[in-house]
Length: 141
Image (cartoon, rainbow, N blue to C red; front, side, top):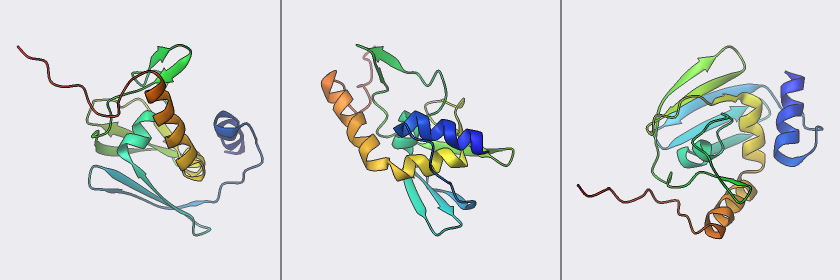
């Protein structure tokens, strides 16, 4: 578990000195939010859009534009289900049919600890490439 924590910390902000407390609660609130609680009293609420664009899955329907990895059009994505994966995490199934990301409990903690900076960077990358959080309009037949 410590190796996972170190890997996640390195991936998000380049350090490995974070100790992640034990998980004490996880719930899906409607299809649009996830709440995660830890034994030290830390609580995080994540939108499904935030979790979808920060999926730890390698595929994640990511577009690489100018070296930036970009997922756009996911503002209204929802979470259909959460499937436990051992004792270390959960697989979230989104209504855009993305289901390959396994979110370790440590990863939720790191996302929550850096949520506002990560979301700000996501929006800046979308703007840089003239993309939107909004889904594309339906195609006419």
